[in-house]
Image (spheres, rainbow, N blue to C red):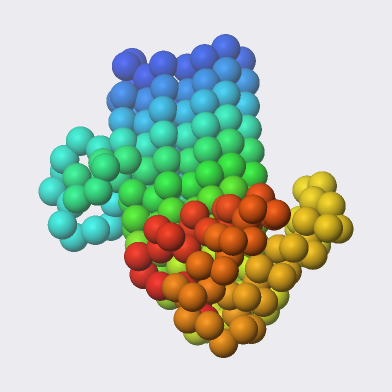
Length: 256
């Protein structure tokens, strides 16, 4: 299960049935859960905690020091959940003391080749980051988000659940839940209706979410005015509570 050329620090803790490929390096203070598969030439540094049934393809760099020039070697962490897939050359960095000293990834995410996830990011579950998507520091990503290939997310942005960024999108502000965006200065293009259908949302729910989108983007109202109307709509459409909660706590302003 562990190739003879792999280098594993004596303090690292590996669960049951963990596979480690040739020339992989696993450093000190790393814990890896059961049934995780690590291909050849992967580097994992600690402090890092990895759940079960993850798959790391060749040349991934996981738990490395961040690229923030303020970082001075302080002890920071990376936490990864279960069932994630990290394709070739993915890079994920630990946190910084300027935030919570933690980078965190949930469950069942797919990070395709050359994805970069920077320090202090908080990523939910069931997300897909396509090839070469880059996420800057301190970004929060919800659940069921898709970032298209070559897309980029500015630091401190929040990306709402069920949203969709087209290939090549540059996201400079917060992206509300359910919304699709595209372009170098990301602009909204409706809701992610197809994604919602695939996740079992009813036609009526999707219709009500589309109406909420029109209040926010097509009514001519300010964000605060739209938020007040959306709060009223949640009494009949609980799916919009996710949108209201997001708008209430947005600090960078939303994509308009």
